[in-house]
Length: 235
Image (cartoon, rainbow, N blue to C red):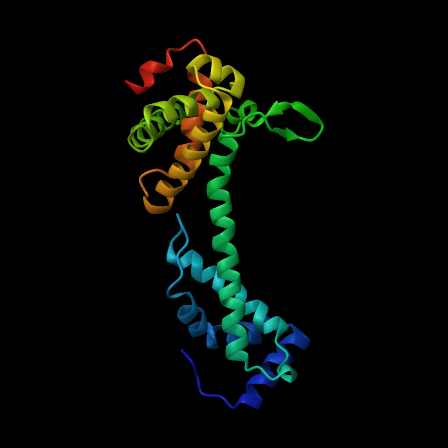
């Protein structure tokens, strides 16, 4: 809760903390101004995170404000801290959103090397090694695959779904073109539609998440081969 304090005294205490790094004083100041975090974070939202996670990011911003505040610049601490808190939270939200879409972007760019010193190793090659396999893990992957399959078949056209699955198998544009009897431009357009539609769905729904999408990709990589009849996946 905010406690009344003379601005000069307020600035002196903050500067004392900056000089000494006194953890007790820092904790007292953080508690005093925690209401700024609550207020600044009230309208912020981060996908797949609790509101408490947002508040923790806000408290990091508050600490940075206590560390960097300079009263001689003529801005009150409250204004400076509010700006720092919101910037920290927005940065965290943007980072989370970039991570959220990274799985999808990688899934549509499977031929991109993931190691500078090994051009032959692509993202698809590393999927199966990212988690220790176990019967329980296999059940989770199967469950996530079925959830994603249901969603993707609902939001993608049968043709786009075929293209997406074939791409997840590691097939080139040329191979998919021959397989589905469409030119490479059509294949690329279908993949771009997949990216937009899946990203839009994940932005507005919570029944599939990053891990579920990654498990879907893993399942396709592990259990579907190029010889599988893809038309069966869209029937």
